Image: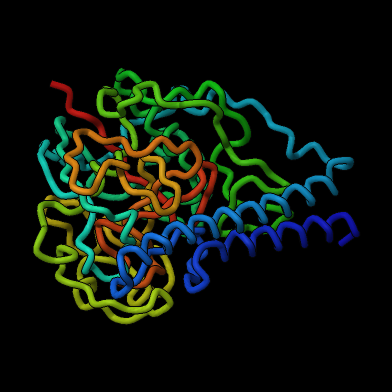
Length: 394
């Protein structure tokens, strides 16, 4: 390896290490998540923990970005691989699409309590603040995380590590998930929810750099991920869009809770444990893939028991993108706790995008339908997929 390639490789490895280790000092999860607080910590301290975790995450991200900048500077004279390339056709129909075979479930509109009680294990006290939420529109939601076969039906590439028709599609970022939703809308002659005319770089090419495949990435030397600029939402309230889209945080939690209020999960209650632990949680064994039973790998969808409304894998297996901004420790609303919310879209924060449900390597106590975390919109990971929805307009 010559000196140039060595510098690039070392720069990327440093960047990746910072990225993989960002978040709480006790959280070894490589997905750059903001950690939740322990339930026996006071609410005030937990709020500080959430805020500090978000600040720490931002610092680590800035450090990683700085490392990226240095590496890119080293290679700028020798390569144009990081120069943005316009890509305005990712969500346009090619003529090779077919209708994906998806089991769509109808979720009736209603009112529920968003968030979790302060006594919940491994709870983020600030991000899980309780609010009464009313959803005024019913919606369709996929029964499973989107599979590779369903993704490929719309003639889109992906770089999921664990291949299989019934495996969740992964290594796709928020913008790529939005493009899939737009293509399905166009295929069914529905108005798309997202404006993806200001996008650039290669679509669905995973996390390869200098001949090495990585499990997680954003923009880095050697490749540039698919990215869009500006506000991509054609319907600011999300809910009035007639096409397919990612669920809001409120929709996702409403469907994942499925009316269960007496226990932490639909499999029963969870016990508290350190976020670095990997203990058995009996309530999860029949309903979720997590660190204790997954064998350290993703699994085909719908292998565990569904929740009472028919949704599989809302807890564990892979994280799911949702269409709500999140800064690492923010509540759904800055209104006083308990203030009723109607069709909420979350706070106005343009960087972090929320993910839900946890993944196959997470500590069991975090697999609750109220756990929230975030990633940058361009991030790709072997631990992140999505589950599409569509509003039922009356």
